Image 1 (cartoon, rainbow over the protein chains, first blue to last red):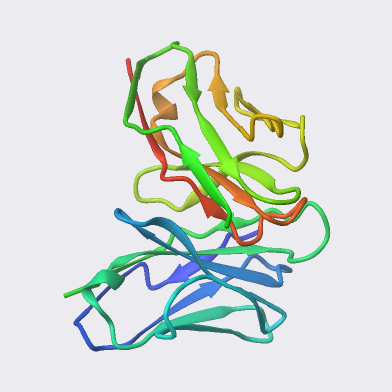
Image 2 (image 1 turned 180 degrees about the vertical axis):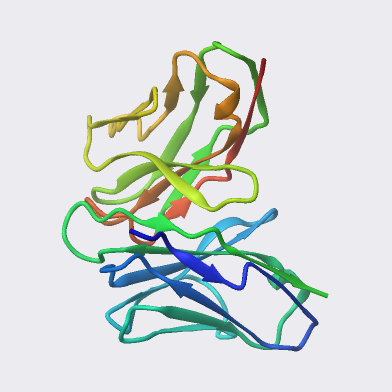
Length: 114
Length: 114
């Protein structure tokens, strides 16, 4: 099976712009979660989507949003970019139900905000 | 809320040395516990997991035991190799048997010298 893929791998934006990141989960997985990794705050949970519905949300401002499509692919959007949004954004997929429910991470998208 | 406290790094060891990375957690209920590893430029890989008290997770010579009485999940390996050099993250999920909505520790950088 192919792993979790994220596009693009690297992105440079300027303050005030918006950005969309994409994540394709492992085939058959219905849950996609997003995490932000920064040197200062570490790894933080953004949100989780399951069957096109947001199932959980972390403590991030409304500028961070996401969605999931019927094929389980997910996108996250960050509007009005700030310098502090520079981070590695990781996506993880899992079956989403049943036990155990192991998450598999993609390689991440490195976002730099100038 | 949930939290994970992880041993501060960096940790530098000689090849074949014994490794311990301490991890303690705060959570209500019956969380699942994980160790993830991140190699340079890559996403997170699941190293091992434990879903209930007294479970021992093991993989590639690494072990960790879920201790509810001490709220700990320390990572150990009897003989480290240069290829084990990476950043190690302890994490918990509030959902029993699941890896959803992970809370991560700050990570421990391990360097193994030949």
